[in-house]
Every structure is written in C-alpha cells, then in structure tokens.
Image 1 (cartoon, rainbow, N blue to C red):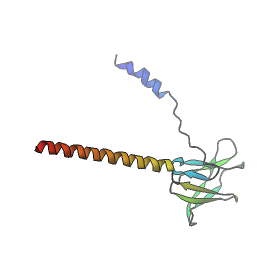
Image 2: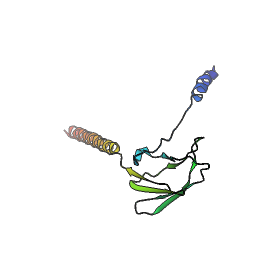
Image 3: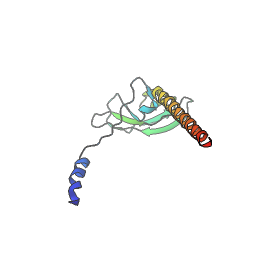
Image 4: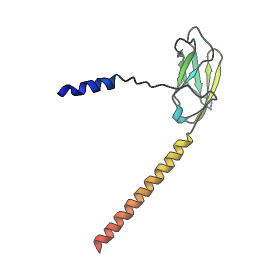
Length: 139
C-alpha cells in the first residue's frame, strides 16, 4: 500500500505548467512589475541577426543584444529586463528606434505603505500589551 501515492503524484506531474512573458506595453510605458516583457519587431525579417543597442536617459550605452526569432512569424524580438525607473531608448541596427519608460508601480507603493502601517500598529499593540502585563506582575 506504500505505492498509493504514485498515481496522484503522476497526475500532478502531468498538469502542464506554462510561464509566459507578455509583450511590453505598446505605448512605451511599463511599470517595474511588468518586467520582463518582450519587444517584438513590427516588420518581417528573413533572419533575426539584428543588433539592438539599449541606452539609458543619460544617454549611456548599457547593453547590446541580438534579436531572436518570434516563432514562425518572421518577426524578431528581444526580452526587456530593466526594472530601474528611467526612460530608455533602443536603436536597432536596421534603423528602427524605440523608447520605453519604466515607472514605479503605484499599487506597490500603496501596498508597502499599508503593510508598514499594519506592522507598526501590531508592534505597538504588542508592546502596550506586554507593558501592561509587566505592570500587573509588579502589583
């Protein structure tokens, strides 16, 4: 009877698990929580050996990449991995350019403020409770 767990374990392992990276916002503004995302070419190319140079707002070259094939569509893509808030530009070796602005996720800031507030209230309540317990012991 020790083998009863094998069938449920195999069933769980057979469930397909997929992690997808979404395309970057077409308007060029993304939040830190939307990274990584894919930048896809709008034109069809025979090969995707296209170089992409990425610059920050200074403008300083921060990375050089080569696009990869976007399936059998004829389009090319590269993955955007920069989470630091800034306005980035990228130049493709075929003359195309683009710009992406990475902004702070306002929901994350709000969640942080709420979390810190709840933690502070809980810590203060525990401190007051322990202080009162200490006073009861003295009496």
